[in-house]
Image (tube, rainbow, N blue to C red; front, top):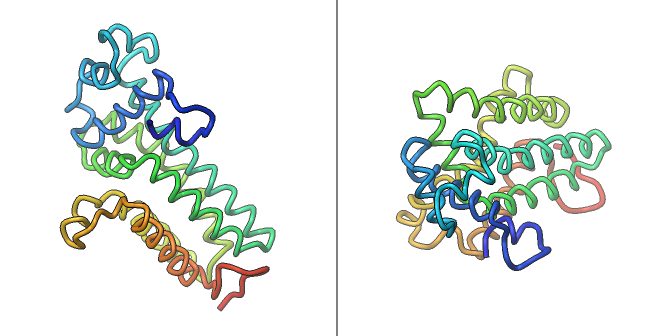
Length: 220
């Protein structure tokens, strides 16, 4: 059962489009944009031929951008929602909701962080431009939230934003390395649960919130 089918909770059998997106996400993450062909993606999705893939995506760029959109647009929505909750004085709910849903999203899109990491290292103008188009709005929205949320000076906010990105996304980007070092699968349900608990405690401290759970959060 594929990630997007799991995310919907509405059916056991994913659509052809969902299968293509999942196969493409993994392929682009493992081998980069130029390292995986449309023919390989079509075969991985169980299509009879490459032409069938073009019924869903007009070309490779359209497929790549659909993968990024499916992975990053929900993150932007979560960041924006967290800002509204914080401004409403619901910091505890904000931290719980944002981190729970972000970790869940990354669990369902386990290759997304590596795809971002690989694209950021690519020298191609296209990959840099398309990645920036999706990531920069998230970054700017995140800065806006952090400016209202935490005890950090304005010139420190970019560093805080980058640190939070690595704290949350880095775990999923480096699962292969972590498995070698720690000696257990960091993607297992138990490991992800521990990581989620750690993130809530760590982010709460970074944002000056002494507790995550409870009727209202208390600031340091």
